[in-house]
Length: 225
Image 1 (cartoon, rainbow, N blue to C red):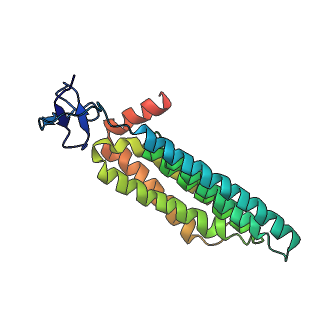
Image 2 (image 1 turned 90 degrees about the vertical axis):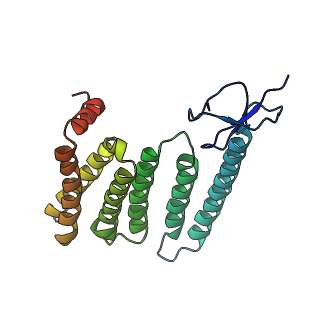
């Protein structure tokens, strides 16, 4: 028995069912009078194929890194460059395995990407003999990049801007830690620490003042206060 084929104009999904609304977005469906045997599009095959490709790429990346470690060990010239390649490969696998996964929201993806980037610059700095550039420049630039990303996300998703408060708290904490390193003499130059802390603090406090009740409710929901 066949049904009239309906198509969602928003999703572009063809549904062969008697329902009047799209099950994905809720939009009213438009029928074209034709029939088909498939009730819903099978997206599981594409998802499984993508996961398999990611696993294959991750496997060969790990094998490549093992080869590079052995090569670096027998041709060591004072630089542990295999640590750099290892950190880069780890970051690539993290990106593929976590951020490509559609089940993870974009906020978590941004958070993991930035955290992984901070770890990567520190690893590279240590592999090159640790001159301190990762703490002096690398990490604060990533924090500022995260601040800019938060602002862009809040503008685009202005109706739910309060969902980015947790990321703001993270950037503020990281900027405070960086400021503590500066006050302890571990970071050179006052400009970058103060700019990083100032930008993060202004974004967070501005959202609290301007957001009012909406911001307070989000904090209560997150921290049960």
